[in-house]
Amino acid sequence: MTTFYHFNFNVLDLNRSLSFYREALNLSPLREKEAEDGSFKLVFLGDEVGSPFQLELTWLRDRTTAYNLGECEFHLAFRTTEYSALYQKHKAMGCICFENPDMGIYFISDPDGYWIEIVPEKR
Image (cartoon, rainbow, N blue to C red; front, top):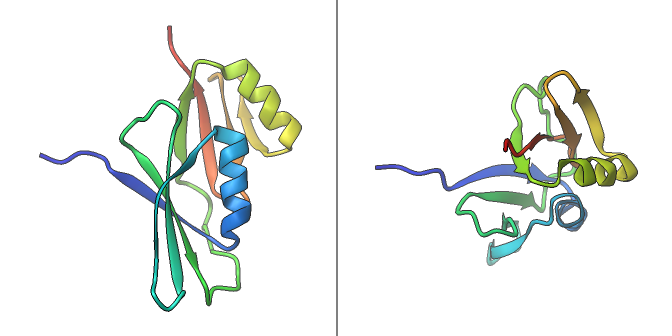
């Protein structure tokens, strides 16, 4: 048997990314791992309801250029019961990068350009 565990985003500025994910999606660090020589740091983020899936942010000390994300044809998705409030928050943050009103979804972009889909909870 296998289960989803985590997904990784490599980031240039770990503190900036941690602040973004805290503000935009209320994600907080669950655990961290740092190389003894300081060459990398991993931070695993979890959501406020304690779902088992985590987002791993990887920071590499020697990385100085932006990551090539191709055409952003991949994304992470979050489902929310507070779609309208979250939309207004993301709009105020200026991080909405694509909207699809016909499907009732939108995407935000994190500081490194990763796209995150926001989906309303179906009732």
